[in-house]
Amino acid sequence: MVMTGHCASLTVSGVKNVVTVDSADSIDASGFDNRITYHSGAPTISNSGDSNVIQQG
Image (cartoon, rainbow, N blue to C red; front, side):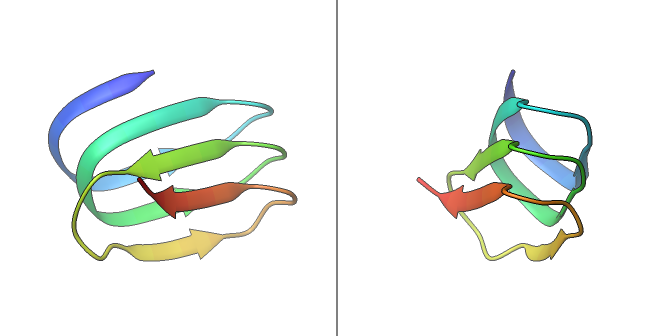
């Protein structure tokens, strides 16, 4: 899933989701093997799952 524009909050849960967002104030990941990429900013990141990847790219 690709989201354009700015998100105040992004929450991803489940298994093996791939999400790209332009920017977000906060990113919350739960579940397993999710991959989240944000393009800009410095979001507050919460990763309560296992093997999730949250990175700027």
